[in-house]
Length: 154
Image (tube, rainbow, N blue to C red):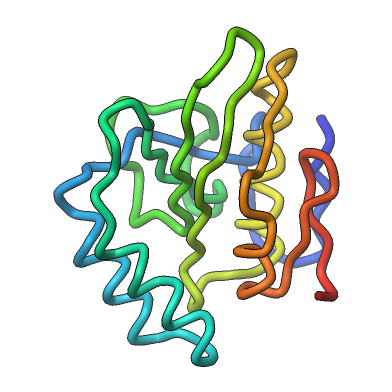
């Protein structure tokens, strides 16, 4: 599966390289505010703090995403498997399209694992198309959108 190659030394189970579950909306403001306190720069801090204050429309799904380090397996879960490394606000707006409205990444845990987990999860959603509506938000984490994957260097 694309996105399963790693250059770090972390132990990952076989199978999907991501763990995803529905995030608890009531916990998001505190989680994102904590991430904002640990931000690596003013832009990242402002983005995370602002996201912690939005009212999420009921039509959006809010997904928690993590890599599989320390888990028995990856994939879709009914309950949280760990503290999320990323939060993805997604709207299923058309039959074959998922619109990503926002992506927030924990500044302390950002790295190859979470980057690959998000990309692997997006890849698993095919044949649906994943559209990142605000790719400029990725820039606050040093990423840019390239199809369902990311690259560093903005």
